[in-house]
Image (tube, rainbow, N blue to C red):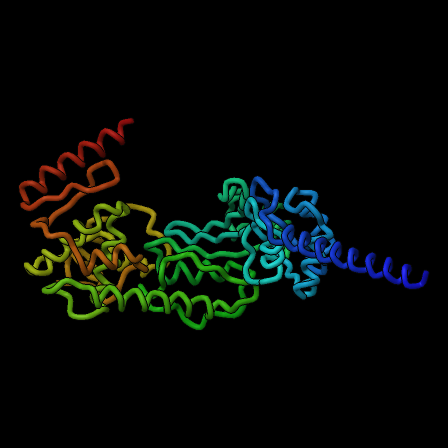
Length: 384
């Protein structure tokens, strides 16, 4: 009898063991298998949350089939205590294993709210935007002047969220003074700016920053990026250019940047200035005159007067020979590349053509014809 009972107990234990192993194997397969999510979602993990709350949210949004397996998998891999706060973009079909890895890895949030400070040539604008997981594109919630006294309520609301990201985007052609003034208005940054960085030495780009970072640190990062770009452009320059140093290249690039916003034109605009330098002609470009008046501190906001075109400043290329002494703005990569690789043309003149671009000419006669056409366009616009 006892022998029979022991035999039965052993059988039950063996069967139970096999069942347990089967359950474990099944659970592991569920943990690593493709998940049921059909459309991407943005999973927000609050500070102080836990895997239980996360698993329930994932179940509610249809990202996992079984929250218990999700929690057990996180426990088994010893990641339950590594949960990070933030907003995470969960892709369609993501497995439980992939989601656990994502929410415990840390780093910057991959979705949610982003506040972008766009430093432009004429104004600085703050934009609050949120990622739409289904399209993987940002939806703008509000745009406003960050120096205004009354910010939109949604701005304060989103700033209060700990996982909101911040980005500073510099447009091509901004001056260093404009950048510093814009940074001063961003109250999530800290510290004073001892002096305005040299003109041309801040790289137009998009920079992710964290609240509390020093303004000087942000400026140093912008200078580091620009120096790398300057070095790379100078190394790739064409032979025979009338440029003796990276500094002269940077000056020319800044003039190209201010003369045209049409990407396809940069090489032609560069060729005009390079041809003029080679022939000993004055550059005669309005943006340099404007810089001589404003020193890059704000926008002139009106047309140039004849007295200003004739007035002598170190930057007035109507009265000085060659390049001005400093850049007149911060040029982007495309303008740096145009300065060292201009198109091969005979152009020495250009004027606006009414379409946002320019008409180029080889001779003064051609140029005068183009100017006459531009005057007609100006007159028509003034009468409408």
